[in-house]
Image (tube, rainbow, N blue to C red; front, side):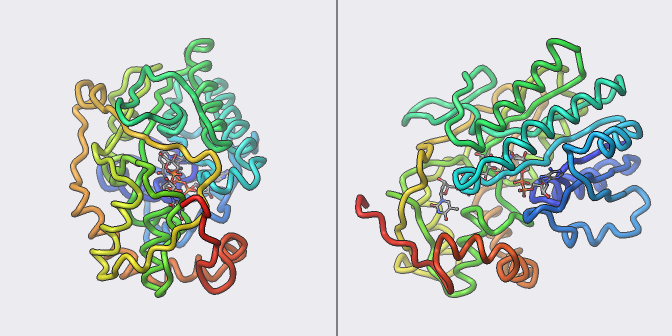
Length: 344
Ligand code: NAD
Ligand code: DAU
């Protein structure tokens, strides 16, 4: 299979490219990536000269580039997106452009190149926020509540519409919070690990009681792979880690594993509109694809910490580069100084 991977220089895309080349020795992979602040060609450096790998720098909103690459592909796995909720709260424009227009541009090109399979990588955030009980599944109503999740929900609807209207051969996956190697250090787990390695405190939003369901990125990549090859056209698959943690609990695990105490926690102002709880019921994926999460959380988090320890130059370059300006706008120069929320 010749697979076009959009966003393949980002966190999950990078892991998926390595997974595919390893698991499918005859497959060819082309990455299309605009190399935004979140895209990093260094991730793919080990593949330089690989006979089954090609990299193309380009924008998923660019019809010409997209058309050319899709013409030579059997399948598209679409990761490219603006992915960070806090950034969407600061400015949603890039989210609307890439996540919505970019997705439609790819779908249009697939329509003009019949039989190209399209797998859309989406998030559980499109379903909104859960109360203390219940789980999201493939029938959960859409209720996105951040500009990021609203843009992903719009993209999901466009993919669903392409199936219903044009019978485009699509599948969709909605997955919970990923962790693992190559995750940009603005998301909770890599931000906290790298802050601690720099001797900085970790900024915990609000009361720390928001819950996320953490899945190791390798489990997610296996799920996408199965949905692409064995999923039923037009169907959605939900992948979760069966691993709910409050942010406070997760922070304490990271602190413990890295040999720090709770004094390194800095409570900061909550994220506006902060969704309280996400959790996924993966029964359909387990029943129909034979998928289940395989990486136990404690093993995954230890491996992840070890990866950031071993790859210090990777994240130091990011933290000292263009990302620094964004980070310091939130937390002040030199570390975390965002004021404590008076409500906490
Ligand atoms: P990421 O931010 O690490 O990577 C995004 C990649 O897309 C980057 O390489 C970036 O350069 C590229 N990109 C951005 N705009 C582009 C454009 N206009 N054209 C081409 N490339 C562009 O994101 P991630 O965390 O790897 O997430 C990948 C996908 O998975 C996203 O669609 C996200 O919504 C979804 N998802 C993420 C998670 C998670 O926990 N990270 C969970 C569920 C679903
Ligand atoms: O649920 C899937 C989603 O998970 C993906 O669709 C998104 O692309 C991905 O970014 C992630 O979104 P979250 O907003 O859940 O991830 P983030 O790592 O930003 O935050 C996780 C939780 O930790 C959330 O409750 C907010 C909190 N948090 C986050 C940061 C960055 C903190 O308390 N402090 C922080 O500094």
